[in-house]
Length: 408
Ligand code: UTP
Image (tube, rainbow, N blue to C red; front, side):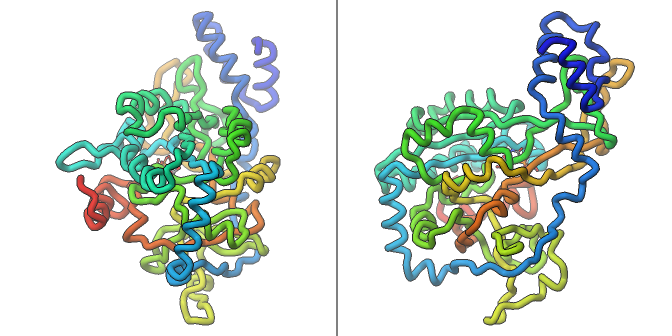
């Protein structure tokens, strides 16, 4: 993109200020800035006035989950179906590791966090160990796609290499970068983080499938015969990946997606719960759950909205492809954004000064026709690390790992 084209694009989105320092930049920096302007999707900031677009508007009703009892009764059968599917090479896994992990307060990618006590045990290592459980049983390597972002790609790939992929077959691990979204002030003016660089932030975990396609992996997956993708978050160190039982159950129930869920441990737990919205599977965030919904009971007298998602989904690839042309709602989140002011000084704010723009994977569920909420035992499969201490922390995860006899 040349300067004239960049000016035209910026004028269209009222972002002309981004060229303010252009003349003072070196030729190489100018080129990089023009490239970034070309690559950036500024349309997100124009959606600022629709800030309410993520609110639930449809009719909410309960969705039945497959409970632990039901799963236990059919586990052998489901597992056999799942293993056959894995052995036929039809299952891939996608690790979402593009987040900033700000709550954990480390500058490194979250997966590099060492949770060991007597020896180093990295989060990435635990994930690979969990994946090995099914690789060992099925005697089949599973393609693992790891989503990173501009901010952590090199560190992540180097870390895996340095640790010899924790014993995994390097030919079956594929790294791809998620797209970045511009970060703006409250009026939608995009900040500069350097004189020749726009402030950006990873565009949320909802962008994973389009980023996977942009990286050219759809073709590859089809060639390999992959039909199902198990997508999961980096921070749950106890989760089972490509779980044959989940795969078998989702296939047998003929669902577009299987979602691992846990029973809420108290009515106010901060987790999104599964529901139907206008007949489509959907997720209500904890802050959207009204008292009326919270108090609704099923015929058996149990809370009707009691199964929380843990960000572990098994998607059918064809169903995902059908969602590509549909737009996900944008989540606009306040953030502290370091920026260059009008005098050329870098300002590092102590309080939020603008927005980041994200789409979320949970909104993808609503674009599908059918979902199987699949209950898992939270003591055995849910140890998320979001914070250093307290709820969902390094401490609580260590305790759960100990209960599951995993040495740290
Ligand atoms: P979180 O919602 O916990 O966000 O991500 P985060 O960025 O990791 O952490 P905080 O909120 O800044 O502390 C849930 C999962 O989605 C991934 C994360 O890496 C994690 O696996 N994610 C999140 C992405 O891959 N990209 C994103 O843009 C955001």
